[in-house]
Length: 560
Image 1 (cartoon, one colour):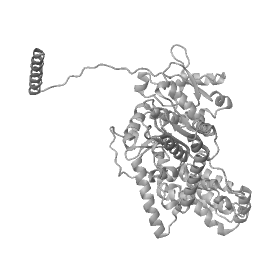
Image 2 (image 1 turned 45 degrees about the vertical axis):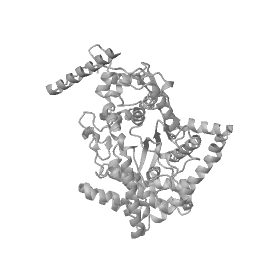
Image 3 (image 1 turned 180 degrees about the horizontal axis):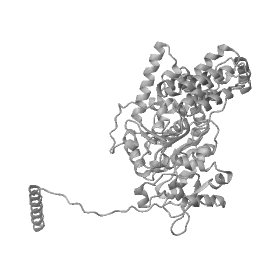
Image 4 (image 1 turned 30 degrees about the vertical axis):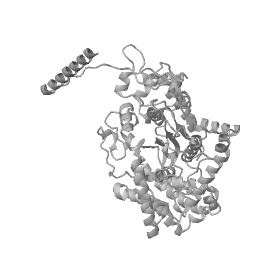
């Protein structure tokens, strides 16, 4: 751990700084750690956690060192070519990231607006800024929805049901995802599962499992390591379903929009995955930016350079670690299951896939109506079965361009996520010389607030059940009406209250820089020589053409 000059290595320096309560930690230590190791450091002790509240970012292009929230931006602009060229984030990107971090953490309650619009002008590096934001939260899962039921009431009913043999069926239903996984993928675990199922099946003559939570904790601890976390999540979802059934007194909450959303999202698989939805033409751009500027192995299970799978998935292509550039996108390639998608840090999906998934959803809904199957689950896309950590829509102004929302917009609005971002250098579009340009721009902004789930001018997602479609449309109209009354009409009439409310909303959701507001370095032009072979016949044609043109020019000058 000591170098030839007697100096400490960066990794040892990290621990020495923590022990001396020095919060300025050299960010080069992250070069030695995977993202898993980085987060494990914070649970060593309280002093360690306090020391890691802020970490030093010393790669800013202005040459200044900045303290940024833990863990900084691991892996960003740290590829060998980036390190060789001295790449780093610009000052305006750090300012954007600071504002974005604040927007995501102002209110951390379930269902709160956490996100906004990244509206930096084209050419200011929005893609790298967003990738840095993703890196700063790698490994984090969305906040668990609040428990909308009364635990005391549930435990009262549990005491009755735990001695009732009839309840055995509900218990076995909750264990079905574990059984199904073991039957297909891990037959060796069947004996353990059978022991757990027998021990957990009522009636209980002894004091085992005094509460539902005790039953859930027992199964989770026993099966952990035998089945993946995604299967445990499915088991927990089944437990949520019968817990809700035990709470007879609070079923009225299911008619409450917030209660419906909590119930919906508790039945989805929580994932630390960031879903990036991009126009088809920009899929290659995003993949190339990730490949060139993100050190993938930092986020992989292995940091030996040979285990970079499972970090970035490109829909229609595959894992970025095995992708060939330029991309050979295959739109007919089947989409991964929700369990496979949940294993990635980033999933890149083009708009064409959203269109396809929406078409499949509509077709399945029609089949469900004919066959009488469950509308709430059978028609869901894998994209709708996850509770994403963050959804990012590039060129997101398209979500607000059309007054009558398109099927793609409705599908994207139905996706469940804790955090949401729109990326666009032109959040509002249209003819600036048009007399109704301002009015249309305000309408577009309100439709973006629908996607962002603004508490008053947006809309909470209650689920994808078409039976409540008319209610959702009514809520959209109410949000639009409130926007018109509070913001649009007063602003167009030059009433101060309209301007103040619009400014407050923009301050809340908008992160934006203009090129004229910042001092970017001038571009560097490099001259180079390239040797090209020109066939003799082509050379003769070029020479004859030049001579002919020269003779014509001489004749023209003499005539003057």
